[in-house]
Length: 204
Image (cartoon, rainbow, N blue to C red; front, side, top):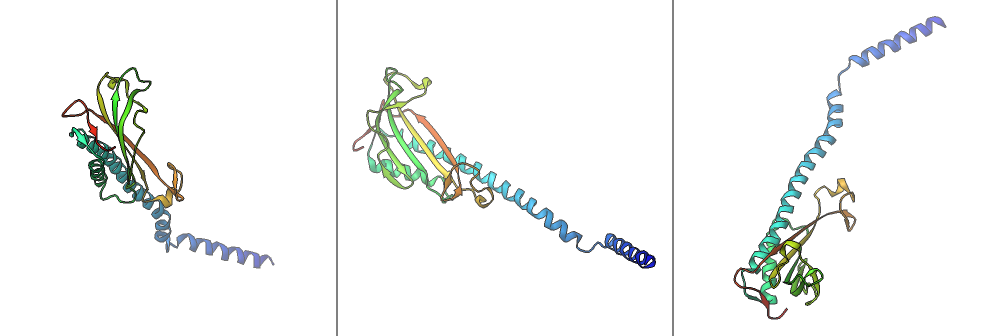
């Protein structure tokens, strides 16, 4: 019995020694361990750079729309819709979602509760046009822009950015859209009229 045990132990020791010297499959195991990490880092780098680029474009949408509107002395709904369509085109080639663009014309006076009242407004809600705010309603104006008797054009742009790797991050960032994690991007831009004291809208 003792001889059998000794023989079994020697056999097990020899097997362990051979196993420790066997290098076959190590590369495959290392590859399997490292690839998920490298893939996550690669996709993360792409996602961050893409998100930063889209966020800059959202800012450019507000700036472009505000610049085009403030170059006018008079506008109508059709012109405003065309201008907001131009703003949407700034986001190309990102087409996963349409922006929500709101143009608000504001009469400024420090006597107003929030510094301004809406003169007229128009909204481009993900491709559908409609009224923005109620004319005559109070609206907020930054303190440094509250100059009595002046006129401002405010452009708000919102975009629900859908990450390329939403299948990795799930709903951990931002809100949810049809079960997909999204990042809310927003930009607000104020500009004064370029060619006059105010801009009128004939049919807003």
